[in-house]
Image (cartoon, rainbow, N blue to C red):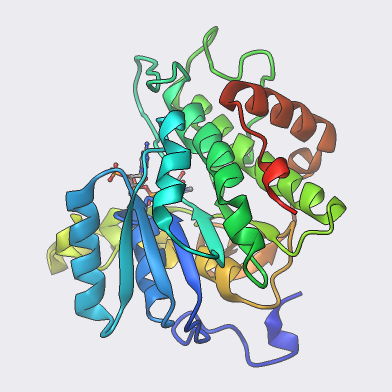
Amino acid sequence: MSSASQSRPWDVHRLPPAVGRVFLVTGGNAGIGYFAAEQLAATGAVVVLGSRDRAKADAAMTSIRSRVPGAQVRHLQLDLADLSSLKTAVDRLDLDHLDAVVHNAGVALDDPPRRETADGHELMFGTNHLGHFALTQWLAPLLSAAPAGRIVTVGSFAARSEQLDLDDLQSTQDYRPKRTYGRSKLAQMYFGFELDRRLRAAGSTVLSVVAHPGGALDSLTPSRTPVGVTNTPGERLRALPSALLVQGKDAGAWPVVRAVLDPEVQGGQLWGPRVLGLRGKPRREPIPSHMADPTIAARLWAVSAELTGTDPHLGFR
Ligand SMILES: NC(=O)c1ccc[n+]([C@@H]2O[C@H](COP(=O)([O-])OP(=O)(O)OC[C@H]3O[C@@H](n4cnc5c(N)ncnc54)[C@H](OP(=O)(O)O)[C@@H]3O)[C@@H](O)[C@H]2O)c1
């Protein structure tokens, strides 16, 4: 199941070198995406931070360079809430291949009112799911040009208890922020597993994997002042009880990083934290049965293709 049986156990603090490889992390300027980028940069890979805000990306790159001598980090201007901008963004990458993309960027609203992207899609479904769905089509040729490209979709524990409403994917009839968020993450997970089925059927060398961070709080995260995380020793002490259940965003990045790097990881797998799926070292998880339903996944795919005017499947060879 994992690399442990065949080689040394996976060590989140001793990652395999990845010199010469190129990874894109969406939302790499903050949170889990930032820590995934920092950890991946330490492997010697080129890491591209997909971020809608240049100043935040600059701060993140400065932070990574200060911690990882010789880090090769770049910024890509990327706004997942603006579907029409995504092809141009990928063209600006100016790469001949991409070894992995981490679909990490996400928006989670706690309160009403319902909000929409510039394209008129509900903001969480539109950004988290539709944005990454469309981005995948434009990245497909670069991922196919890599020896073994990977798409790592970041799902969520919050998706476990949700069901999609295929007649109200955009929550126009009944908007409840937490539920709409959980459903947007569920849509992403359906996408990750369906993409794996389609890539296999097409005989592609590209893998699609789903990973989730468990519960990851800023208050349990080591300080990275340039990216807006500063926890004093007192604050860290007060946050300690939550560490029984959840973890910091540095640890939240571990399953994602393993899904990018571990040669033993296979397409269609789900990776998450070891302890109750909420915290700890990364391990492979069983896929909840409702997320493996290919009929719902295919219907979601068809609607997503119609809403975005893209079909990621067409980009892979
Ligand atoms: N934290 C958790 O406990 C948890 C649990 C389960 C799953 N997750 C998932 O893990 C991922 C990262 O979560 P996090 O806690 O690290 O969140 P976070 O700290 O809020 O960071 C979210 C990132 O997404 C970016 N983003 C938001 N909208 C975007 C857009 N339209 N275009 C491009 N980038 C955009 C943000 O950029 P700005 O800085 O410009 O806003 C930021 O870089 C998300 O997919 C989330 O659903 C998190």
